[in-house]
Length: 120
Image 1 (cartoon, rainbow, N blue to C red):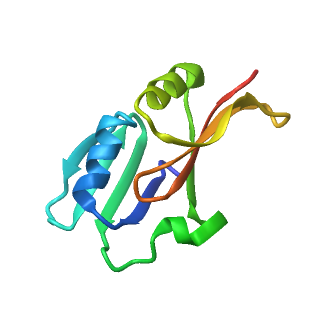
Image 2 (image 1 turned 45 degrees about the vertical axis):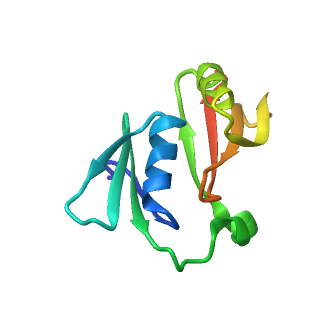
């Protein structure tokens, strides 16, 4: 049984990434006892972000820069909220034949996230 999932990401600028997740994606930011790491928390989603200034920028990874799919309860509202904050959208909000209403965005670091809601 899997109790929960957590993501672990390398970020080029930890403070800028924390501000993006807080101000744009509406996550809480928590210190975790190591100055090179932060925990980004929203509802049941946890993202451990580590400061890795010498890592390959996610924008350079192409399709491999996707790291997560967030299933939310009101995708239209979340879309409106993040779009109003100028986030880089990589896929417009739309209904898909696989039963999801979804959109895609790129984080400040270049990681790509899909966000969707079940259509049923």
